[in-house]
Structures are given as structure tokens and as C-alpha cells.
Length: 192
Image 1 (cartoon, one colour):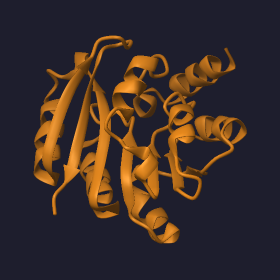
Image 2 (cartoon, helix red, strand yellow):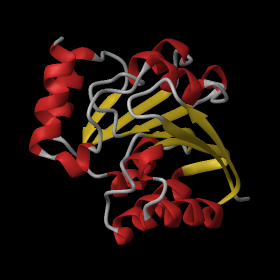
Image 3 (cartoon, rainbow, N blue to C red):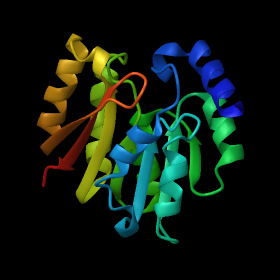
Image 4 (spheres, rainbow, N blue to C red):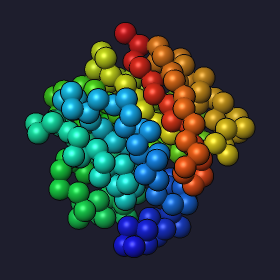
């Protein structure tokens, strides 16, 4: 219950940054992890971990020596995660600063998960985040993100799909109906 209270507090204080009404469902998390191959990853990043619905499923799949970075711009979420998650580095910053933390870690990301609400972010900020992700991924790296179906008709959602196709050599999309609201999960392979 504490996780939900923290989530709603953060969502009420910064609704456009949080971009959701409840934490991600088990089905959504499973779909996001489906092709991540975390047991092979040396560096994993989660952008917008919120209260850790996906984070809690990532941690047990990581190699013992894997680098794990969680970046969130909401101080309420960061404070909560630092108490709840004992693996990885929880960072209070914007996702567009990702490359700085990858450089500090000294290793490119194999997998970057994103729960960021691109449909509510300004277009320029979305582009900066996608550029930071592109520069932070290793040669065979992948970005796995979700966006809600109800926003799919919105111009920003269509622009996001076009931007993903411009930044990545392959973009696959799957539907997840067992989430509130239903979502699309995108798996994007880095352009070489």
C-alpha cells in the first residue's frame, strides 16, 4: 500500500512527469523483460523507475557484477526507491543526462528500459532523451519502452514512433491489454 500512496503523491505533484495513474502491472513488466536477456547484460539502465514495479523484476535477473542505474526526475520517487531497492545506483536527475552517468560507470548500456511519458513531454526534450539513449547504448544495445494505447492517436505519439524508427535500426511493437491503461511495448535495436 505504501508503494501506491507514494506513487499517487508523486503523480499529484508532477502529473505530466509521472504520466500514469497506477504503477505498471505484472503483465506489462513481464512483456518488457521478455526479450531483455538480462543475465547476459553488463550494464542495465531504467529511466523513470517510479516506485519500482519493473525495478523489482529486473534486480533478480541481473548478473552479480552488472552495473544497474535507475534515473528519475521526481524526488518523491527517488527517495522511496532508495529505501526500497538495495541493488544499483538510484539517481535523481533528468533522463537527458543519462550519458554522463554511463560515462561515469565506464561501460555502455546493454539494455535501457524506459517508463517515460513521451506523449506528455515537450518534443525537444523527447529528442534529447532519445539522443542520450542512442549515445549510451553499446553496439548491440536495445531500448525497451512502453507508451499507453489511449495516447496513440495523439500527434506526439506518432512523432515518437517516427523518432524511434529514425534512431534505431529495428523497432518492434507489442500490445499489452493486462495493464491500466493498456499499453504498447516497443523493443528498439540500436543502429550500428
